[in-house]
Length: 261
Image (cartoon, rainbow, N blue to C red; front, side, top):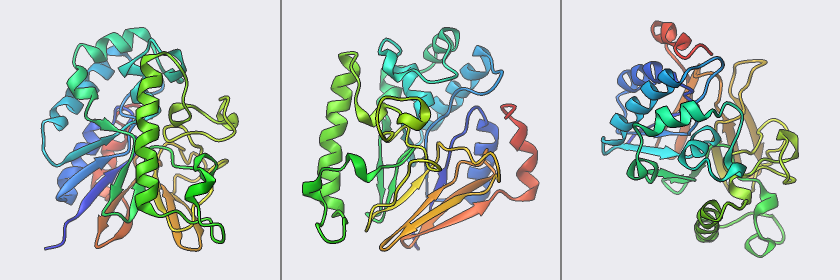
């Protein structure tokens, strides 16, 4: 039997819908692309309920969690460079009444899915990758080399958080009001910034497709890339090295209003 992986993008308090999608698909594992918290006109109590659902999910062995910019600022708000729109101190307090250090430690910045797809919240831009890692003719990057470099950068980002400093991994690009030419893994804008990397397939959320509510695709020789942040109207299933982007079934659409967005 081939392993199936369900990938759910930005939830933003729509945990009830996420739960229904999980039950509907019945996949072997679930990966969340981040942004569990914050919503338009939300309350601390609503975010506390989201934290309770998230903590329960974290007790399940077949769940994996990727940092979103709307998650990481509740992990460590003393580093003001982590703060993005939607953050409120009252929500921070409510969330951290539930989430502890062990829970936050279960988040990661990226996941390689079967060595074939790079999953992050916002995406990886070639701007951040050292030239020495790139093939001089094609610009492609070997996944093993990319992984070693990313692991080094993640450690540097974690140190920067503790030291109240910045790091490209969690900083926004110019188009999102940040101070970097291109956004990092939690902030890269798919519509205005994302550029495919030859030989690296990517699946991301983060950039809400307000105008069409449809997933967006960008391709390049040797890579295909999807952004599936559509207010949870779409999700993805991975099997046999391939990504299948699916629209939520009609009988689940009533859950889309959960979280108000």
